[in-house]
Image (cartoon, rainbow, N blue to C red; front, side):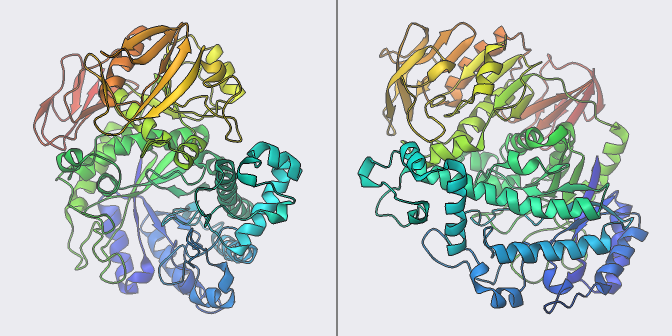
Length: 639
């Protein structure tokens, strides 16, 4: 695995570049990522391209032995372009323009901006496509960051109508699919259809789902334009993009189809503070991040990637500047996060950033160096980790164990029509993933069209639309299958299944659905139904029954249907039963300890605030660390 760093030569005096490059190599870094925000420096005026500084920067980094990941700068179009084409900016859900002054100020649907993005991409690829220093390309930067996937502009409205006509063929077919007879919403032509924002109350859910699909397709199309240019002009180089954490606004599987390696930006502390973790967990893991945040995304994006190739393009090295609270990582956590990525199969971890910026919006975002050029704590951790990665050698592939099926469309549907606050498919998937990890199991997060051959256990935490291909895969699957609530509940156009859910995925009819307010609970033995419960008509066996008779889990053959929201205690019981039947070796891990098996190696990571000891069931010869793990420590055993 390569270690790298994000670097901005345009931010620093040219006299510093050579020393920066030397120091990077001295601590074991071999990759450097540049250029993603440099458009105004590359093209300070329309049509006047200034390559000289970038030529020298690339030459300097190359001379030090660093391979360059060169980014297209399209996330930050310059002011002169916005002034020349003011309607290129996105419009938010409330009808407000997303103006110039920060970043990502463009609409994916604007044809003029797509042409300009293609032009600057082509210019960069023509100049550096065959440069020996350039080993990879990154398209744009963090598609959708700052809520920028959906644009409610005139350009988006026009493109949406074209997309609808191509999808449905006739307005009659659309009216039928959407059920527009409800609330007298029938349309006479595609041109009559507006975007689904700014309605008096909620818009038709089928309308929203179509718009979400359209907006996702616009990201795919935008990315494909750049990929096609780079492939033609820079053959043999990997192309990547940096996805984000807990972000589902577009279908990452679809974007990933054009990439050689999927990248993502790992900020465990920022994500812990910013997302829906309990206050207790936010305090318990404030300096470590929840034990499953990074791993969940490692496995998610490995599952998105063709061939399973994935990278961390930005790794948190210290306090960030964008969360509500920004503590520093516990000493050793940057090393732990890096080795955890290694254990999950990463080909690259790139730290963000080399030197903390003394100006601009990210002055309080840490780097490997402080603004005064003195090493920050992560500097030494990166150097140590580089030596350890070299000593460990290449990582063997992990064996298949558990397949967890996740679809971005599922999260769109459960957020468009949640029926209960916060009950989305993404968080159902994370809950199932976390429960499996606490049992010491390896998980692959796979799309609904993935092959299930070789897996011992399959989990569908929440999948409203179950495609026919997956139905066939499940029919041929011999191991235990656990199906979560809302699965099989909708057609592709957001209507309730004929004959009632969950359709052919489980022999039952869901006759009634409840979302439960806090305190309204159905208590079982060691578990509890909260938030959501489904009532079924079925001849299946009631496997878990609450004290009041409410059934939380049904079983038929090798399939279980979880009729309640996947709470941790309930998941622990259900998944333990399924894992036992699958013949999987489970561990009773203490809170905060996680393990990852990869070939003949077992990695153990201590995310807790206290000393932890590896269970006796975790055997092998210690090759790194020891069986007693201090906080933020890593142990590696060879079988």
